[in-house]
Image (cartoon, rainbow, N blue to C red; front, side):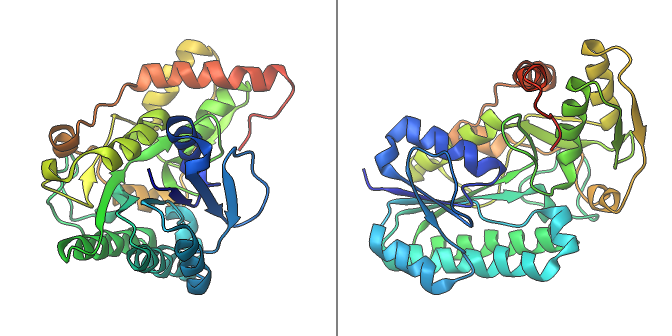
Length: 319
């Protein structure tokens, strides 16, 4: 088996994906890359800025990986604060990685897209893969471009590109990375730490979500499936459940009676309002066996179980 390169390995998803890949294939098969130097990874780590085209080509030329998981990116809320950075990292960085992968003979390019590729003209409920995609954020615009560019390269037979449109991702291991759905992680952490929480979205804002173990499994699974089963390529919808901040608050009150949440929306509300409330994951289910294991209640229970030791040890549960 050829080596695997992971970009954006220090991010929310990358941290846990690298751990899973090392466990599954062996740390000698995985090379993690990102900005910065300090990591706890068992595998080789290489400092890499994906916007530096020369550096990207150098590592791909040296490694000649069989698969790349391209996770480097700037998320929704941060992308609206820093649109030029989001454009450069998400768009130019992705093209650099794709071009380097093709040049080095990489077989598969796996990347997370997002529900942000949809927009206010998209239907709100049970959104299909093939529907209106008119994003209104820099994050969504750049990710839609990446979907289409990777699809183009796939059609040309230059690389086998595959992508999944992730919903909000919830994790207890790593802090959020500047996304609009980050409120869910913050709310759960606040409840475990017995703190009040102020939510930046309205109480009835419904969004699709997924627990991190299911997101990691989905990325690995789509990388392993044979090409013949895939009718779609870079735009698979995936989601495990959907809820509102109010519903999450109610679930947390079952575990923490007296937990208090205040709702005071900010600029992220407009971003959330442009996204669907739920998506149809049936294409992913039928074409490569997507099957999430966590529902909302099981996710909340597992988050609490894993966050409680941080509080007992005196460490902050804040993000």
